[in-house]
Image (cartoon, rainbow, N blue to C red; front, side, top):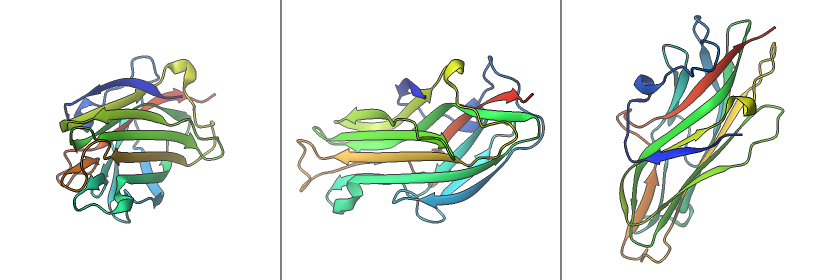
Length: 211
């Protein structure tokens, strides 16, 4: 199960920072292809989520262009919670299997004093039970980039069964609460979207060879 590793306020280029995990098999040399089977949720309307594989096969990134939860002036009642479920087909070369060892989430947030924000996610292969949600909380006042990282140790990795291709599901959610702030005069939001590709989420592969 993925667990919390760290949270910072610095945004980096995801493909540049994606590095192989020292305790895993090196990634396969052949190209990895990821197809988006389905996209559902208020945080990722059709055409607003894109997936790209890192050139060295150590990770893949997801870029959103319409993923913001908000509360207050200009917000609708349903805007306080946004979610997205990605159903992905990861095509890997024969003789290899993978797990997701680490997930990095980045975005920008503005929370008025007294307001609260939350990012959470869970993951599972088709046919398996979903993992428990891993949650990260923010409290206002806050006005900055945010970063949350979920990680797991090698003994707890969940691997795709060798010789089988099972879709991989990622569920994410953003929530914002007014708390003690005044939603009639202020607006608080938490965003995971990017119009310039500068903010992405990254999922780091762990690889191993099949018998």
